[in-house]
Image (cartoon, rainbow, N blue to C red; front, side):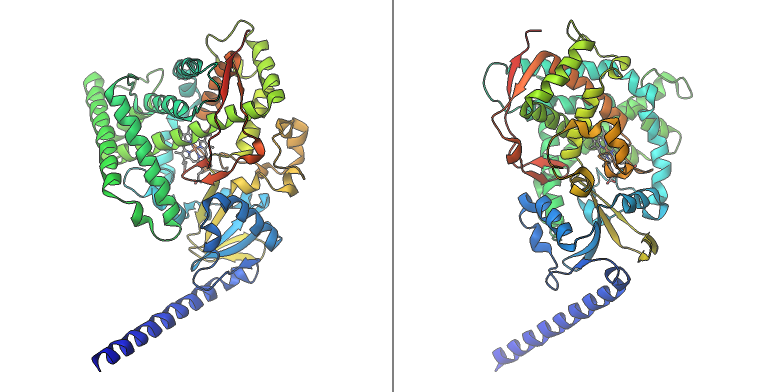
Length: 498
Ligand code: HEM
């Protein structure tokens, strides 16, 4: 008898839960009817939406591309579980989104992995606080400050070159770890003013902790799509997080003491200012709290490292996979540095237009940040006739935008630096290409990386010839915190005679 009552109670509970969930879904669909009646919409299965399309990470970019083909439009709406997302690869819509103040907030669901108490700085700062924070940090990215870091950029590129040299003549080798080591060293130096000896235990510890942390964040990001982010928050994640937090906190304290000691009121600006000097100065002026100094430092460290190392690896890979293009890049670099490269100056960078085109094309086909997401904080017009209600999420797939056939032609996936000949650029909408996003909330570090990346390539390409047996067509990109490769192809490195 009691078993029967138990079953009855269970059935009634399930029915009530189902009815409540259905009612909430109905209300949500009603709330978004103004959008879904105007934009082509993929509803998928009730309560699941098209989430099943995202289960296989290796196919996400492919499925997204198919999705746009299915709706036969450049802007549409998809339901993932019970949440609608407006997706666009329409340059005109994108222009409006990234330039309008009502879209300045980030789509919090897509950035949950940043909310770990360390990384939740400028990238995810709510719009109302973001402008002031960005202004405080921006002197680090001022032209003169970046140029003052040229010796650091050159030193780092030489360090990478020396490490690659040890792999020459040894067949195909995995070089991504080496690139990451050098990338982290550069970020620690320019952002945290921390120079760590390569063979030291501290260096190994930081490297390991940082990579572990990024791996955890990657899981956090992928699980987060299904509301399961808590699965990634393991005790190990917390330990690594604490180690890194303590590290940045102690660096902050040291810098604060140094600044106070040297001259508490001095306004003399050093020739180059690592970012920590700028944020600690803001702390002294009462513009930042100590927590903000730590969070912004860490955010910058991670934002610069993860994206830059991906860009360096992609560029070397593209050179290896396209020998004729590599030869052109090399010949151009040789014409500017006929006797080899000792150091690269700012003026040298202006003499390498083909290298520029090559880099632009590499970031087109493998943009390190493949998606960006925004959220409306009031009802906002997306495009004529379509009003997004408050709280609507908009995803811009930079990856897909950079490959649309409507924009880049029928062989849009082919690696072709000529896409960036001035006459070809002129034919395209300016918002067809945006590896660093656009508008006021674009990548604050884009000049930093444009310069540091080119310096690395100049040193590397002038010294070595890269090749690989891995085929360009077999590359599979997967989303992580930044764009990753399902398989990271190994490269062969040979020393150039001259
Ligand atoms: C190839 C390398 C890089 C690429 C492709 C890249 C791309 C991007 C993109 C697309 C955004 C916009 C993100 C969004 O709206 O969600 C962004 C934002 C940002 N990037 Fe980068 N980035 C790169 C390197 C760097 C470097 C080197 C730094 C720092 C030294 C940096 C710091 C930041 C920060 C702090 C933001 C947030 C800006 C804000 O919201 O005001 N990035 N980046």
